[in-house]
Length: 165
Image: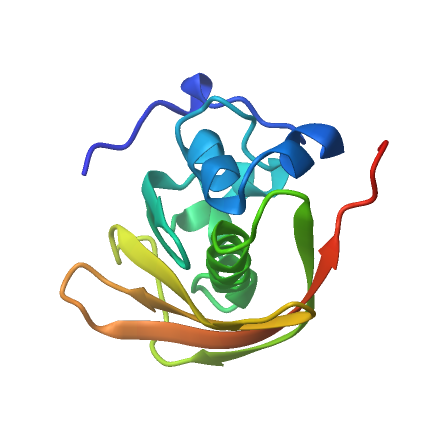
């Protein structure tokens, strides 16, 4: 698990027509491989060692002092970024070309706090069901010893990407 240098990652948003032309799995893999830009929100968590299969994604991140809240632990927003991203990308990886998604709702349960000393955390997202109009997924964050730190579920709206955008 070697963390790549942040300078090697391009952040941006792929054009809609590019996303629409690829299966969701090909799109997610292209992002993970650096062939497409990584979403700007990921600058905050710097994921690495990312893998994707249909309906399943895994990536690692390291919580740090820059993620702290006023009470001296990692802010819940850090976990929210990781969990929401893993669930959304798991859903995206299961969609055919020309199809997109957006999160309708998600629920997070925080189990164990994180600090700058937690070390690398593993975030895994899996689809539960992917239909024509809705998809559900779950995600988990675990530490290097496999202890559960947080978990979440989501419901996403699935839609056809408008042509010509």
